Amino acid sequence: MSESSQYLLLWLEGPLQAWGHDSKFGVRDTLNFPTRSGILGLLCCARGAGGPEVEWLAQMNSLSMEVRAYARTNDKGQPQLREPALCDFHMVGSGYDDSDPWQNLLIPKTSDGKRAVGGGTKMTYRYYLQDSVFAVVLEVPQTQVEPLSDALQNPVWDLYLGRKNCVPTELIYQGVFADADTAWQQAQVLADSKKRLLSYAIIEGEGDGEVITLNDVPVEFGRQKRYRDRRVTLLEHQ
Image (cartoon, rainbow, N blue to C red; front, side, top):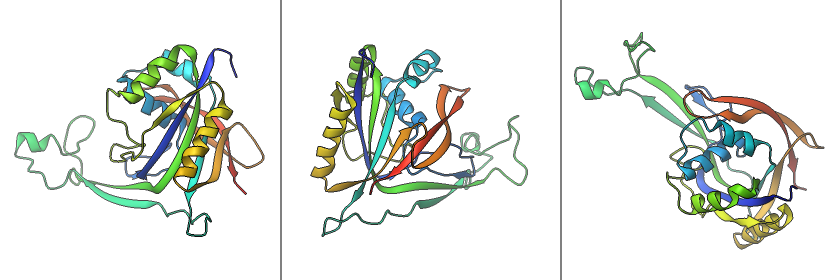
């Protein structure tokens, strides 16, 4: 821990969440936990920052982030089985009248603006986590503590859990703490109040659990998005 850092506690709870890291247009998958790019994107929404944010990302990417998932319990206080991912089927660009100038703008076209071969309608499959709860403890530099705290409590843009239709049902901002242990203690208090049990954790680097390589470290946002890899370890709670 850097003496000039503090730890931000985020609580991510809602009926649907989606944390994609390699999805294409036709199939938009989701991981079983929030990505670094998703969390930093959420903070950018709160800040109203829609540009490349290269310098800000470089500063934030050098700091630690841990995610913990919490399962719902049954009447006996035992963890329930995780809900399966929800698949939502979309037709994009169908039902529009291409002779109407305004409706024609909503029909997908090729990169040069021409009508796509076979029509402009596109089929997409979008996957969502159901009834999931995550706590995220993110190390932040001292200079970012006040701006990020203010932004999360008074966001410039709407905050959502991965995709814009994934609305949170609990306050995302849960405070800033001097060290990670204190932040996790507060997360446990909140989990206990909701009768949730720790299910698994995602730590950065290689550990004794399942090691996963993700391309989810944002180097540049905006129109020309760029990412780099990181390795994380999934630790199942016994």
